[in-house]
Length: 332
Image (cartoon, rainbow, N blue to C red):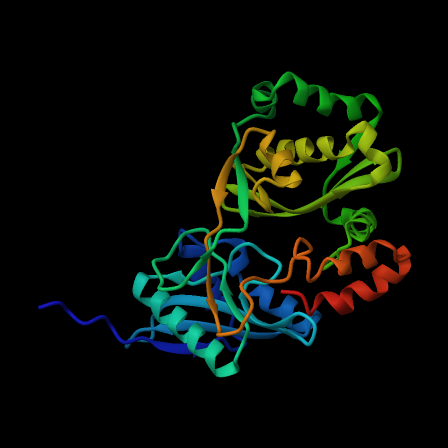
């Protein structure tokens, strides 16, 4: 006779975040997206309602966690996302705990009549939910030293990296690069028609920042989450030096995987990332869609929302920077 699965109680996360982060740190499949600090960022900065649950057994020991964030607007709809703006953050822990957390997330979505519940994960969890495959990431294995990696690249790619170096461009890293990063990133996102979320390596010509990126190191993997370059720098391939410099830098920090971040399969960004020799990795995001709800989160590729990027590109930079933080809190 098969033994019944243990009964698990769901506990909302209170102000004690140490236990949460300890659980994240000792779970092999966790990512930086699961850390409790994101709750403070999403709540305090963006005003989002955060539902962070832990699944505990009869002894009170945690068996799983799930961060969940409500994003609601009259224009874009009503969503529960785990986690907005990031590529992961779905249920974490034992199979029984993850199933219990997913069931409660679906129940919450039904109670609140949300348009879409989206659980962003790297691994298919066996849940009885449809999977969205519209996004992938590209991951590149890193050798112990940068020169070995450099020699693995094609001659064309090596030439593209050398060109900005010959033009006198140089990369700098550290927390003091936040403001230069934002200067480049805000202009890049305005040109792409996208509001900026947050405000750290930067490529300079002299003292002028031309390309910038921001990412997260977790165990032996580094994910370059946001990156951009000024249009006027593209003829000298500042963005190529940016990516190469990040690879050099994180190899020195012990990273063995470079994650290029999510992209749409077959798109221009996907082709850019693939040229470095990495492998495509699916992002199987589990979804629950209510009757009459939306099948995915808003995208500039969707004709329904294509007017937004076109309008945003026309805004003066100072206007886009003022409006962006107010608007982005309504985007999932």
